[in-house]
Image (tube, rainbow over all chains, first blue to last red; front, side, top):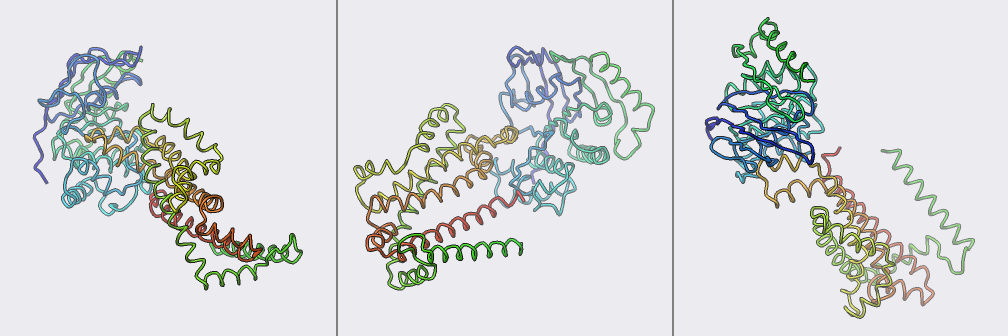
Length: 255
Length: 246
């Protein structure tokens, strides 16, 4: 496997996006540091997912500029992987083939592809399920496949669109901790779109709060909680509660 | 499972009894009994007439059906993926499906002549519209999210088509092929009865003109058995290719 490439920063500079007459995002400025974990939160319809798709190069911006590392985004690039809320797995392919998918599209040789995929499946805790089809897995396990597929191409940037939204609470907490552990080992730049205030705070170095219609950056909050958080009881601390409450107070005003 | 098999066996026995009764009644002049039909079938196989005719007919069938899949699937996918092509071609497809296809036979005789290929053309005309229509419809089963996912990984146009669109549409395509195959058998016999004096159709015609109704029935029965076997084979292939749906 190729050594993990150094993480790269993301800059979003004066970006706007409209869908017909609806202004989704207006003059967004955000900078995500190399290797930073950033959460993106806001009322529904504030354009969080749209911003993520713009960074991924899936949608063109109407105005402004987005750079990932040194590349100005004009379409999908090799630095970025995306984890989708609905997993977006190929129902006709096994776990192994799903995880190999990105590598296959990029022309990686079959044996190397298989080796990398097996290794990544192990990292997300799904060893033994290589030959299962997505329909045979629980939601949490399906999303682990989605994460493994994203990680298998060894991206510098991981874009996650409400990845835990359709997973039950206990599974979600375990999964969040696993993700934090993987992130601390591989140091990727992560942008996590979420509608859970606890999750936004628990996971991130900073939380960006967007205001609705049109989406603007309303506030950026630092999360000075010590890491690693996954092995300590961060959720039980007064500091954690204070930070979550801070996000809530902002969101309440925005509704 | 055993219940279903037993039920099937009962239905076959019931059908044979009904047939036997119809022959003894008799419902019409010279209506052959199951036994007489079976004996005629054995005789036709022994004499070599049936195997020879089958071989000729299978050529037309495979040629026409193969072309229907090779043309119909890409055409249907193209229609589904490129909106304007679909909207234009759809009209012709609807017309082709509504058309009494046998009416095309004089046209085929004029342009292809009378040979094994002309039966294949009729088979094609009978079956291709259904393959195309289902491939076209199958594109609607493509989840836009999967296309988005593949694009993130930098999928090219060709990769989107072969790795997302085709497998997404495959269940519909296979259903279309199965239906088209039954249509192909209809087309084959129609062509051989009305157009080319070859194969199973000729065997049926000859037997009829000689009032050998047992031989005629035997050939029809044989054709039915072949169609049934082909459809069952296709259903098995389908189950294998779509085992992820279980």
